[in-house]
Every structure is written in structure tokens, then in C-alpha cells.
Image (cartoon, rainbow, N blue to C red; front, side, top):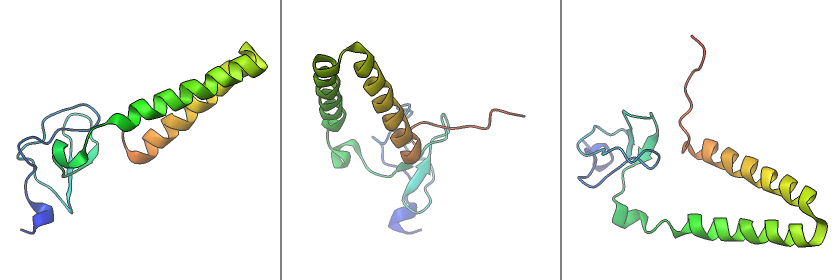
Length: 105
């Protein structure tokens, strides 16, 4: 068993649903959450660091929408908000932060 295949640390949780991943088997430094199916990197919360990036993105997006609102009006601000939301949903899907499951049976 290599270091990348060691069980998840005691404080490891799923980045999507916060399910505790302690002791689950790993493959190539990744562990699958049994709750939502997301593949998570084996890092403790201390190694990941604070999640202040989300706040920074939210503030930056808010400024973009506010500037659009004051410059072009409500119609443009709503459109820009929808485009930003679609963009960040796409980013989350690409990262695997949103668990996708087969909806048809």
C-alpha cells in the first residue's frame, strides 16, 4: 500500500456534502464519498486551507453585477447574473463539486 492508497485521514470530509471520509479506502490519492459519489483528494482541512476563495468570488461577482446595474439597468444586470451563475455551475460540474447521477433508468 503506497502513501496515495492510505485510508482517509480522521478529519477528512467530502467537499460537497461534508460526509466524514475517515478510514475509507483510497485509490491514487482520491477517495469516493459514499453519500454523494464525489471523488475527493486526500487532504486534511488544514492542508486545504480556508475556503475564503468562495467569498472573494462572491464579492467580485457582486461588484460586476452592481456596476452593470448602475451602467446599463436591470435588464443587463439580470442577464449578467444568469451568465455568472451558469459559468460557476459549469466550473463546479467540471471540478466534480456537483454530483451527477444517471437520471434515467
